[in-house]
Length: 199
Image (cartoon, rainbow, N blue to C red):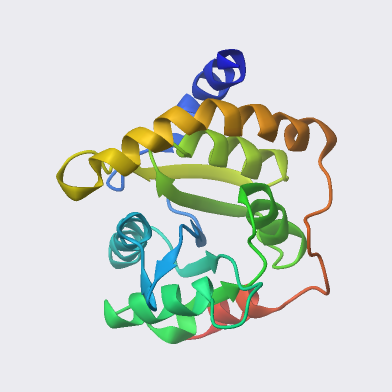
């Protein structure tokens, strides 16, 4: 079970950066991590704060927020967009993907539905090697920026993330090997292209 994790850490090491040192890309992909009572979960808020920092530094031009919207009344991408707008990111520079049901789906939809060829994926450090590996397997030139989320009120959630990650990486090997369609595919969407072209 630990072998895929070791591979992911080694294989993606050269693509994982800090906010300050990550290369510029057109798009930041922020992966969903739950919403509570209409607000981002603490871990998701930290991901979104990283995306705000990337945008303010000029490291990215557009933020693609990808999350779950399968159930009535549960809409991760819209909550994520509202949070970013509240932090000063223009709404015209935020694109929502409503079918990011898991990491592979978010990555492959970014490529196949939104036409993204190069991006910075944003998540927690414990998830970052898997996210970078999956996005690169989806055919995207990918760099990653992670939030360590250790300390304060999120230490327990972070420890749980590290404990679960080897099993999640083992599951991800299927996507890395077979490159399946995402759970929901659909038509191509021009949102990212339009956001990049907007003033």
